[in-house]
Image 1 (cartoon, rainbow, N blue to C red):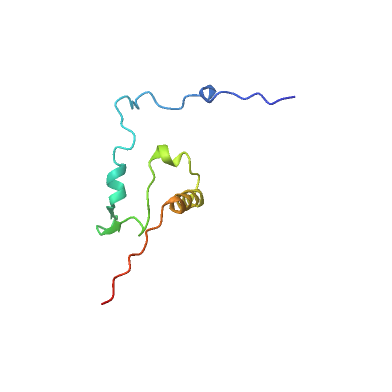
Image 2 (cartoon, rainbow, N blue to C red):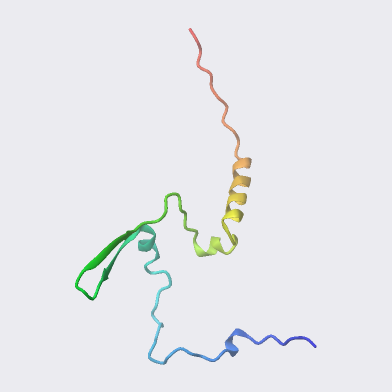
Length: 98
């Protein structure tokens, strides 16, 4: 007997009616987060802890439409190495000796 797949919309709606995302913009703050941010934690004893959060050196963020084609870093690296192999190599120009 085959298992019957239920459509995603068949799940009960658990979103509260007071939440309204009609005018929402997806990824509105994504560019700012890529630049880094400061996190401040206020403790109950009145002290605060400040942490600078910066992207890791060499990290690259793919746009969602590109990310859909690459499940992981290995897939991205394989594709880019293929493109690098297609580039024509530059000829070295030797300087004339006098």
